[in-house]
Image (cartoon, rainbow, N blue to C red):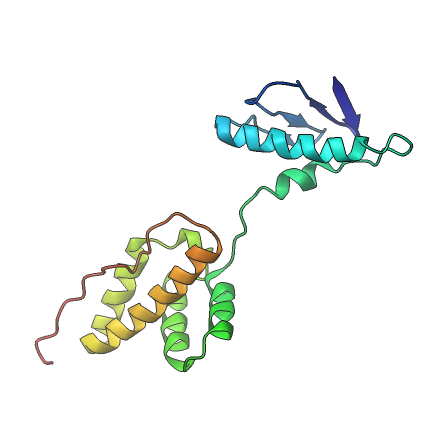
Length: 175
């Protein structure tokens, strides 16, 4: 049965566990979901919200479909934002992680934590080597950044390998 609210239309078919979802308004098109598990999650969430709205037969409440769909999008944080959260929770000296962060952000940019790559990590390690930092200093800075990204990946429920994990650092001959 089609349900229309504010120019939005959803067709719900009872009994289907896997469906594709297309939503249109005059300016936006949200593409159909291709992953069956994702489509099922969307269908279940929308079905629950609509059932709740329809349960009160005396006054049907309008449903904001775009807001519901956007609630499915994963949270994202800039590296600087998640770093502040991490440092506020940890009882550690903040200077070493802040020094590492400022150097890394100035080199690789303050992007979403999920967008930092292994190449960014290698570039940072190489930059520290060129500046003449000792291996121990490079390791401390990399470990600080690695801890922040481990925290971010756990909090944001990201299934991603930490770009600083097991990063090879060339041993300096002068140490």
